[in-house]
Image (cartoon, rainbow, N blue to C red):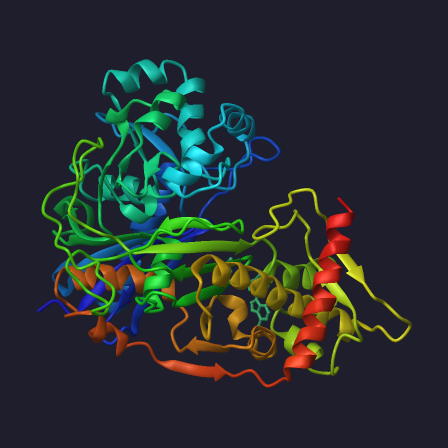
Length: 522
Ligand code: ADP
């Protein structure tokens, strides 16, 4: 009997593989960094072949470490860096260019063109996104416009497009499956998140032929089987989700109103909004959350309709499946501020040391740091803002500085969560946390205090890979249902609010003034 689920976690800087057992415990883990290519300022690329070879290498390594063969693996789940775009030759498997990475700004002008065609509202309404170079749409168009003969070859049916999940499945199945899942499709800016199909109007506007697009399925679905030549046996690929949606699922945020925050380089906040796709009035993005056809999180949340047929490439085909949706907001600089304290300011030797310094002082003496190094994200969306440090007096020390930087992570999170509360019309009473900086107890306590809600930190903070594993495991019956996997969510620590309302309001009003100062610097 196969005892394990293998998760491929293809991130922006490294490929990882984690093998999980039935309790959601890690059996083995392997990781390999790969090359970041910066051909011009603001441009970021990856070599798709290196993405593939590093991912394959870590899968083999994780299996070898645990002494497992393919017959021990019940299914594979994939989670991946989102939006990153690859186009390749259907016959040779040769990419026509490097992958254009989500961070790449090369198509900013193309996005301005879309805006000048008055498509902003249309894009928002249909794709749930705010027009930006970040998403795949303009990256695909760039490849077709700039690589010699690409558009003609695409129209002739010789090329395929995929996000990283699609590329990996295509390689794992030796070119048999050209597929993606709803969460990845919802980040392309050419997918209608309500009708669950590719959007003809946007495809026409960007001159993208529909025949290069993958078929789209729910995140929990039997996408195909690995080719025996690849890993030495056939394993079902049964789960796919973009990294943040996978983390939401790995945190067991199955119910409407449940929220997770990942404290990494930036912060990524996602709230499950159930079957309702809420259009934000506060600068958040509407996206599709991971769900498994036929698996109900709870009686009130009806995403249980069985998928009756495949999603087709065009809108003429209505599919009987209602996915869960999510509101998403991100903070650009979170853990990155701690890295800056370490590498730029040289105030600390390690990120974890920040806690010790912050706890040496009772407060920041009324000072605030707004780390708007690259502008401010949700809910402000101002790319021109820059960082400020305000309120300094003679007593201000290094300890206060470090504390202000950590507090800023929590304040920025509150700004996004308040926007979510207003958009969704719910009161957030608890937040599930993960990511590298969630290990900081000071930060988590301050977060609970300033948010006036509990922060729950699980034992396993590898929630992204775990989410992909859960999706695959639910699909093949390794886990019976959502309750089965909820049993695996073990609390490490809850941080409960411990300050008075008056103090909270004073702190928040200071933060709001500090943000105004940053915006004024524009
Ligand atoms: P990413 O996936 O974005 O690389 P990680 O989840 O690995 O991020 O978290 C790394 C980030 O968290 C770094 O920016 C680092 O500065 C920050 N970090 C790690 N540990 C701590 C800590 N104990 N306190 C504060 N920040 C931390």
